[in-house]
Image 1 (cartoon, rainbow, N blue to C red):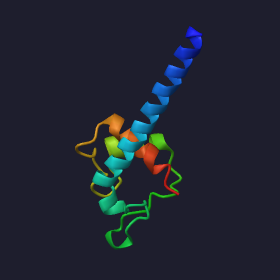
Image 2 (image 1 turned 180 degrees about the vertical axis):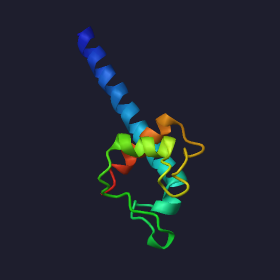
Image 3 (image 1 turned 30 degrees about the vertical axis):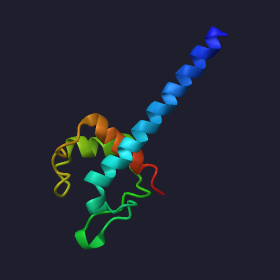
Length: 100
């Protein structure tokens, strides 16, 4: 019986953690990314900001690009994105991958 309680508690904690990370990613995306890439990741052609919805990049590539930048990219992604740490970049990347 104790093992069942431990298993249920563990599953609950993991589910809550995943849910909070997803919410955190959505909130961070809204605050840091949607101004250029759109609320639904549709992009903004007038700003030459690409769509993120349906991107072929995987979450780790998105997180690295956000956290560390890429010298070949246009600003602001040519440098590490200010105000976002690696954990937050991962949360944003996971959220971006949910955009359909």
